[in-house]
Length: 150
Image 1 (cartoon, rainbow, N blue to C red):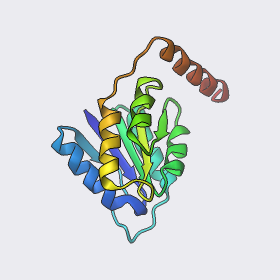
Image 2 (cartoon, rainbow, N blue to C red):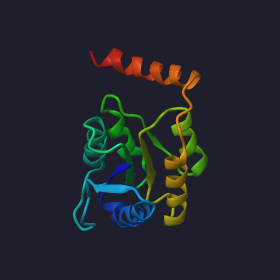
Image 3 (tube, rainbow, N blue to C red):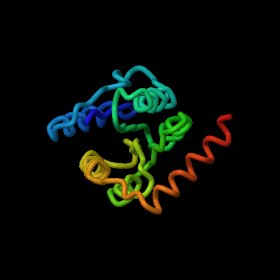
């Protein structure tokens, strides 16, 4: 699976470590930036890049990291068709895939440590969408999006 990674300047070290971790697990990782902790990067830009890469089919899923994970996920969710979720622990990361078919996991470098971030990724990438009644609910989310994107 090809996974896009994006972060702002606050999360570069964590992003690098997680990309290494996922590469060791057999994932192909694509780095959409940021690259230099000394250069300020606004999280909406990175959230948009990864979300658009998913829609374009360049990558299948995404990992976004900023200070809290909130801002970068909000930006990604503005791209039609994207479902990004902020999760600070593994259970929510698993459930956002199982019940919401989320394509992007987001978290905060100032909120979770490196080892917890790895557990969150394991839960997210180890989960499978359940479909059924959850597919109906995801469709309702898509219908709301479509209503406002006319």
